[in-house]
Length: 308
Image 1 (cartoon, rainbow, N blue to C red):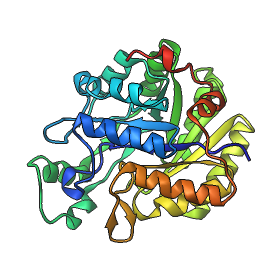
Image 2: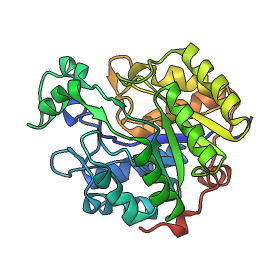
Image 3: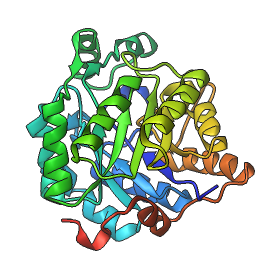
Image 4: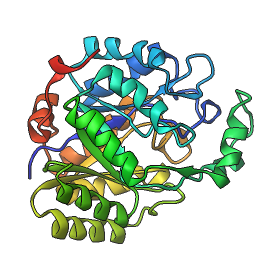
């Protein structure tokens, strides 16, 4: 098996600060946790921005600029900027910071979907900021919009014009079909780096049988012109990542996806989760990829070509 890429999703736009005091949202904390995750073994840092005072998901390029240069100065890990942002953002808002910073890598959700977060409300007793509970409550009527036109726009803006490669986030099997459609159109150049996403209400549940079905489907659609990674929300994070590693895939951890390190115990940092999955995959006989190896495997343009 080839070296395994560990991605770490540092903060995301799903969890709210009231759920964990360790979820970073101030720029210095996002930067410190990203650098710590890289030092623990993450070759790719998947990033979102938040308002530095409230932790609200943010698309403001100024909020991104407060931590991107620090991360670049502190680690050679690959910066992977979200183009998904948050389901409450428009496409123009979501693309503002990636356009300005021209990263090596971007995430790209391969379809529109329900994005329901409201079940988390029942587990939160004390609210830190006024925006959090209303934000979660309204997700019973929230659709993340990423139509074929939106996908084509992201591919053109970030790929064709700025040279980014993509983490294709697939929350359901139909998203693989959509990716194949764009490969057939010539808008996506293989090999593809596919991130199977489990555990978001509206997408696939974290089921091992579903993962094996997805891999068989991707084999049929893409042959050898793809690599896959797995992320699972919540308690399924480590079990599903372990399965992916055993199957020859790559893995993603991070506080965007799961706030815990063990049952009933909050993770103190992103690095703690990276260290845990690193020990597991090395125990399976996998070698953890360096950032340089990840760049070579994914055909990235290199850190010298970014805009920050």
